[in-house]
Length: 69
Image (cartoon, rainbow, N blue to C red; front, side):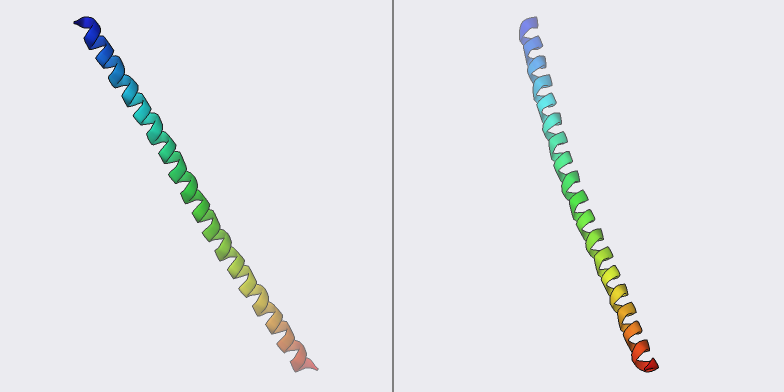
C-alpha cells in the first residue's frame, strides 16, 4: 500500500517536473520572440528617424547652397 502511494507520488512529481520544465521552455521561447520583435521595431524606428533627419539636413543644405549662389 505504501509502495503504491509512494510510486503515485513519485509519478505525480515527475509529471509536475516535466510540466514545469516544458512551461519554462515555452516562457523562454516567448521571451526570445518578444525580445526579437521589440529589437526589430526599435531598430526600424531608429533607422527611419536617422534617415529622416539626414534627408532633412541634406535638403536644408542643398536649399541653402542654392539660395547662396
